[in-house]
Length: 318
Ligand SMILES: NC(=O)c1ccc[n+]([C@@H]2O[C@H](COP(=O)([O-])OP(=O)(O)OC[C@H]3O[C@@H](n4cnc5c(N)ncnc54)[C@H](OP(=O)(O)O)[C@@H]3O)[C@@H](O)[C@H]2O)c1
Image: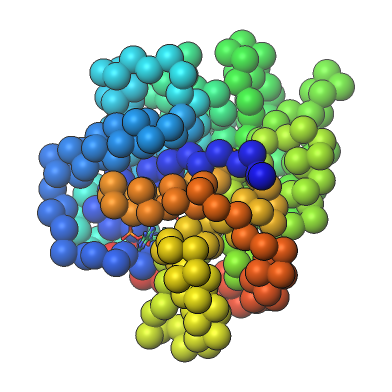
């Protein structure tokens, strides 16, 4: 049985609009309501055994909510991870039409965001570059890399990165070659992998066999694994997912999550649940295993990386 743990990502919890295909858009979008809901989801997750929580400064008030929760609950056994590199600029404006997050992978942004994120210590275990890319130059920026190495040494953190887009493999390959004092800088990789986007399978397996932490995000393809009229091309996939869901008496989400656990066996798989109901349904993935013939069929549903990321970039914030 896979030893993958399920963690909770706060991307959808800390801000009123997000890129996911939400199943329910009729929700109270006030800050108070979001904060109360986030505390509910965090408490319920903890009660159900989740110990890993992932956030970023660009998840609206997500970092603040998690900080408040961490301080008030005083759990000693939680593993928190956050990131630097994106700033949230939508200012809680519903339907904000501009870019919601601004990317900046500079040393000054790292120092500015670290000043806030360090309040997660000692429960902060992984500190990541948010969406490292080749063109941002962050993986060649010795000032940033040295500072990350310094934080790693001083606080006993794992240093990580997250990646998105068609260049995920090249980003990981580049990061693997960054070494300080004879040791790899990067200990942890947060990567997109799901039924549609499986391009990183081989390199992620290598990372795992080299003892690295592999965290999977967007395992539900931002909601695209659920039957949706916008994606007629996925009808055969939806039919098969729903057949498996009926057979195992779980939802499509649990099948899609279980596929990642049984096929890739990552260290951690992030649930992006925005409410306690989705959380409980996501956690059902821990209660069964897929058969090898079912995994083979699900593996055959991969689409090209180019197609996957083009489709994702067409999704709307809502
Ligand atoms: N580093 C990065 O660049 C990056 C990028 C993306 C994500 N992440 C991390 O990964 C975490 C998870 O990713 P994600 O949330 O973006 O994507 P995801 O897990 O692929 O998709 C979440 C989507 O699935 C839906 N969903 C979940 N359970 C459901 C259920 N039982 N029934 C119906 N719909 C359900 C959600 O709907 P509702 O919204 O209605 O719940 C949402 O639309 C994030 O929270 C974040 O921590 C990191």
